[in-house]
Amino acid sequence: MGRVLVVGLGPGDPALLTSQARAALEAADSVVGYEAYVAQVRAWRPEGDYHASPIGQERERARAAVALAAAGRTVALVSSGDAGVYGMASLALEELERWEGGSPPALEVVPGVTALLAAGALLGAPLGMDFAAVSLSDLLVPWPTIARRLEAAAAADFVLALYNPASRERRWQLGEACAILSRHRAADTPVGLVREAYRPGQTVAVVPLSALATQAVDMLTIAIVGNSQTRRVGDRLLTPRGYPPT
Amino acid sequence: MGRVLVVGLGPGDPALLTSQARAALEAADSVVGYEAYVAQVRAWRPEGDYHASPIGQERERARAAVALAAAGRTVALVSSGDAGVYGMASLALEELERWEGGSPPALEVVPGVTALLAAGALLGAPLGMDFAAVSLSDLLVPWPTIARRLEAAAAADFVLALYNPASRERRWQLGEACAILSRHRAADTPVGLVREAYRPGQTVAVVPLSALATQAVDMLTIAIVGNSQTRRVGDRLLTPRGYPPT
Image (spheres, rainbow over the protein chains, first blue to last red):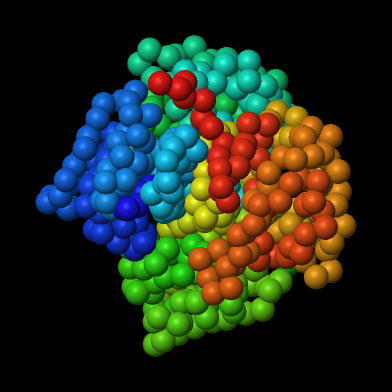
């Protein structure tokens, strides 16, 4: 019996892989994933058995990875960022849950640098205090659930990391999110926007919350909305932890 | 003029360092940090100029790092996990903010695997849906602010990562937190407890929320409290993202 290693690739630059993640990818007989992420691995590890599939086939990928492991292979099932955060780890575990007949393949999750940490580092220190991550994609979660989370996190003064802020077909959610956040945060609350973090074409910008709704954001962007204490330091963001001055 | 690299060390095992973090540490003339974290670096990189200081001297460390950089050195200011999450990045940026006379040293934040990702990986997939991170330490933040965040995150069905759940002198906050969470989550909501993640002595356990208040937790523990959908799969935790079964 083989095993499934669910590996977070980080932002995509191999310099942001951990040694453990690199070792897992090197040990894998097969690499299974969304085609763009499989290409990232193939760029530095050209040989191997690759199984790339298009967006939307997440469950099929998890199933294929478990089937390959059941056939004796060591399989890397890859996600961007951290595999546990809006990634493939939960789907892989669902496959083990429905496994029938004998013991299932072993499964190990290999952590990675999720998008909010990559964006946070490029912005300086926006995440210095309690924070919440919310995906604005309502493909799998009803919008009222997302809206309730935005409302709660904004009211309780969490720093907010917005994953999947918009896609080509999904635009109105960002405007709705901004309307909710604006009920609890000042119009000039700084928002960091990072696109293509640590990849060619990277952009980093800071805009006021009042301008967020009209920014050109997409699935490659993450937005970090400051809390009431977040301020600009040059072109960076600082959310102080509250140490007294000395 | 030198520069400050604020480097997240991840959980402590060098296998969980990114290549970028390792390169930053190798490039540094001086390493500044809390004594336990400096020791982690020294274990695999024995030569160098080390500045270790005890807990509580966070602002002094940031100041020392900036002063060494101003004197021309490349300085690694180290934090555990990710330097931006309850780490040294915000204090380093505060030092740049108060800088007087000429341009300050350059500052770069190098991301790392924060504790919630390390614990999440060891637990399987508890972070598959929107989550919030809250530190239970009220040394720098008034308890009512923390309590309000716990209440809001619990009511809006976020998965909750509790950093710094208790220390030797600080015990009652965990009980209070459990009382708040129990108003919004079922008593059998699974909670993952990870202590010393990826270090010798690592322990991983899953307990019901009703038993959390009496667990032996400390500053080396992180607790991940499931949302209403989180369930056990064997000894792991699964928070489904909501993909329809096929």
